Image 1: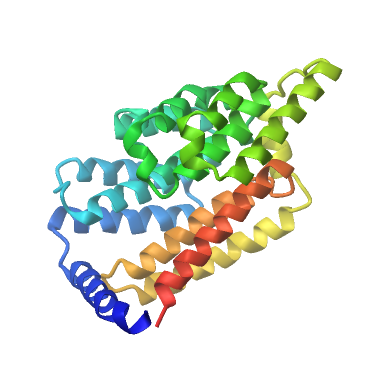
Image 2: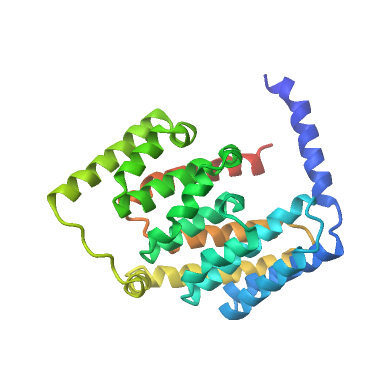
Amino acid sequence: MRSNSSPSLTHTRSFVSVRQSLPLSSKLALTLSLLDSAAEQLMVLRDFRSAFNTCESGLESLRNADQEDSRYGELKMSLSVVGIQALAELNQWHGVLPWILHNYECPEKIPAKIMQMCLLLYTKVGEQAAMQEAGNVWLHFPSNRRLTGYGTVAELYLLHILVPLGHTKEARELIFEEVGSVAFAEDQKQTALDIVENKENLSQQQPANPSPDPSEVVVVGLATPQGAVIGSVEAMLRLLYRGLSVASTGTLHLRRFFLAVVILYILFVRMDTAHPSSFPWISRLIQVLNQMRNALFSP
């Protein structure tokens, strides 16, 4: 089995290597430079307003670039990731979804990773209702069902949007309709159903608590005992970026790695990983990271 698959794997890797070695067009090169600047402003200089403005400039330069280039979508998503974090740091989270919709035109075109970030962000600030319509449209768009992150989006939407809002009927429909059949395995369906039933039982036993003020949620999230750990992580990331800035010389490899670290920082440091509803998603993320590791470092 291994000897038969080796030639095809070698051919695939050679093809990927050739594509990655192709020179960037002038517009994509400018966008890549702006992406580097935005990441440095965000992580090193902590100048969030400048980071967001630089992302805006990068996205503007992409509008006239060759959209057929395979790196176009990657650059656009990377600029969006940095821009989302900049807005969140500026406490302008309410503008994240409108900004993303402006860049991607409609919910169904939003990349899976960006949709995951939006779901987590609006959950963090206690405004799950803002993501209900966009998440529902995205999940029911047929083309999105082929995306790698489709199951994760469905899981986040179920656990962080529908269940906290008390929409248990919609949650049941999501589990058993076509979305659930694509996104969840049978054991995951049962686990999700148990969570929904538990929510229904709690709702029957006690009145619903009023939604917390979003500003209070943000303050609580930033003033936890994890503050020292967060500070250490941020310092480490700033040093990491300085090293990568020196080491990167025109290729996308190290920049991709740095942006992956930024995404992990956003997801793990900025979300409550101790919350029970986070466990299934974190487990899924670990599986994805293992797959990425095997793909990147396999012999």
